[in-house]
Image 1: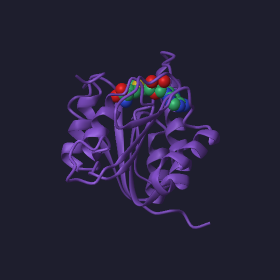
Image 2: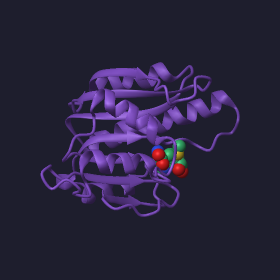
Image 3: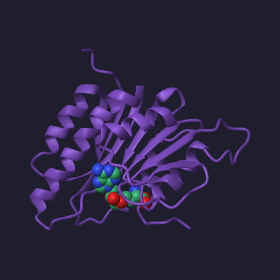
Image 4: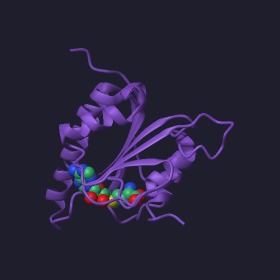
Length: 192
Ligand code: SAM
């Protein structure tokens, strides 16, 4: 009943690190077809399924169409890196703040491993700008990347604004792929 197998990676990570709590506000970047959002809706109780728990919020964004899902608010045909998308997010999130940013975004693969790696790292770096606008202090970020020469640059940037950054390779992720996740927590807004 999940829209995509990728759900199992998020379930595995969340079972271990408990980043999605009832009542939390979550932004799901690169959300289509919506499997991660399905997991998030359950874990933050955004459909209000358990009336005894606080009700969270899930907002998903994708360049593609995301079929509707109860408990989630979707920005289909939206680019995560576009400031116009950030402005809409501010309106959709309670107090304009998120507890968690998830990103399973991936560019269309060109087949040139290094080029795809660099492109995805650039997309992940843009999440740091998004965090500055919407992530509340103490919040966390989980983002997929493809391992390669620029991964350390992303890790350094994340470490400069998050108290803890770790690299994850869920067992649901194919062993022979370069897919990894950075799990960054304890966000502190940079002082300007
Ligand atoms: N997590 C999703 C799920 O569980 O259903 C699967 C995500 S799929 C691996 C990656 C998605 O990232 C694609 O749907 C793609 O359109 C989206 N994407 C790539 N670049 C994007 C961007 N700049 N803004 C929004 N979405 C983007």
